[in-house]
Length: 127
Image (cartoon, rainbow, N blue to C red; front, top):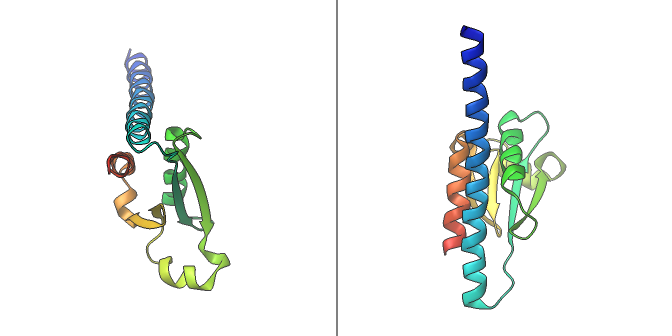
């Protein structure tokens, strides 16, 4: 009985997470479309993730972006800081770092909560 209850709870949690990502993607898309309509420009955000191999939090951020991404909404660019000494010096103690349209929005442990990334993208689209 305990295993059945846990399986049901896990299934419910996964469904709720998927619904949350779908809702977030829909909200971001509506806000971006509204901005496009009012400005009559084709707006597509560029989201840059500064990362390096072996960074587990970086992998989580990329997974969250993958769940939210729709090619019409934003383009994800991954920059490996180990390939550029200047980037390494600037971001090695801060990764992951997320920049939207070349402006750093989030870094490090602020990204541990997936909703922080979603909220930041929503707020960026609203402006």
